[in-house]
Length: 561
Image 1 (cartoon, helix red, strand yellow):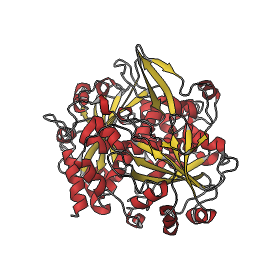
Image 2 (image 1 turned 180 degrees about the vertical axis):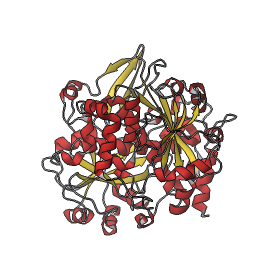
Image 3 (image 1 turned 60 degrees about the vertical axis):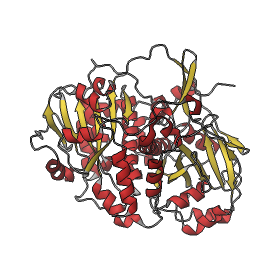
Image 4 (image 1 turned 45 degrees about the horizontal axis):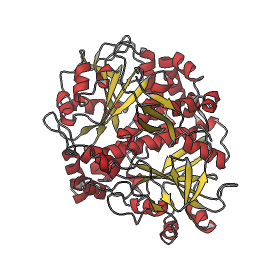
């Protein structure tokens, strides 16, 4: 076992919550050093982006939410100031302001644990007529919805950088500032920051789909090269940015055959003059050595990792079979979603604060949501370059025509026997009579478990009051051994992508979701008889009908001038 893998496993075990003790965290939230959730590079040239009012968003009926799942059928938007503005407005901008009493706070399109937002976003693009005169790297500033021009580089470098990618490609880089989350959550913050990266990847992908574009994770990029490209190589100290990933964005009708930027283009970025000085986020800090060690251990080298990606163990269904099964389980649901505007769903997404514990979910909507999470049927999962590792353990509380109890949904059917052998032998493994034939969905235990669901989710009532709560069980030991310690963040990214999909599915169907990062890890494993590290619980997500917020006002995202 490598030293990096030992460090990651040590972090994973140390950051678990248990009934007797929580993972190490701050004894209290010190508001005097609360981090600023907005990073700005002072002294840069601002490129203001177009803003849409709530009324304008509500008036847009095209594209529909359903069309985000087949972006190749939409005419690709021209790459210009308007389309770039819309991409960032629909993925990382402020979605609304809330006010209660004398307190006012913003919410964003991309969710974040505790609304702390460790994720920073960068644009790397060639010239854009009427917007970017030269190839540039920009930082996105959501508070003012603008791009901060950090550097420009030569057309020759851009030509090399974009070689191998479709015409019309640009790149989006993501990084994390762990301090923003560790201020509140302590050691477990490393997990939450990577959940947020997954949410960000999916938020970008949905926004791109609405423009007839798609995203591709450049899986063979190394951490150092990403840091060089987005200009954070020299970051240091508690507020430094850790590079996460780079994605190519390009017209959906085209194919991206490259999984990395040519290495010959990277040196030019190390010699560029970078403009702007980042604002200080906090007057003081608390050091979390466990996070430092985990971040160091999960640094990724830039080699051809796709060569060791596992191929599917069974032939995928034909497109006709997939479409047929989809229509079988949610024909009415699909018809409804054909009229739900995509932008309204994206920008209307909120986390449920409290849920109605007497409301029931239609079973066809429930099955449609499960169907949507299958990687073979959903282009949103194209960004999972190394494959899918996550299954859903479901506490079903209130779904019509389904017995309350514990269920398992296997997103990779070939894993059934392996999973069955790894958990309690007395589980039922019964398929509900009304379940579509192509879904590997099984009742494990018939019992009212809503209170237990809440107990496992750090006593959060929403896990009990939800129609269902999903616990994301990821393959763990095998991918770590096959790929190395750097795959650890990716496992959380997949959970975040699933969470963002469930958020939007809930919103489109008149429900609401909520990500739950606080849960008791090993007690859940013990409850289902899961031993060792073959699978690990990495994220919880609740879906239900929200209760109205009392005494909270909703205000526009950006005040009209």
